[in-house]
Image (cartoon, rainbow, N blue to C red):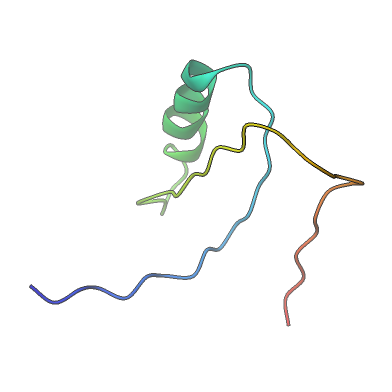
Length: 60
């Protein structure tokens, strides 16, 4: 079966949540409920090493 090309992300967000249960509820009840959202990719960061402020992505 041929691999489908990965779509580029449309939204990048940083969240601070209490635990995995809160993450699951956020993804299923808030993000998953948005029209047109068919999938989401997540990455858990256990600790920030250096962080001055939020990273703001701009469109080229």
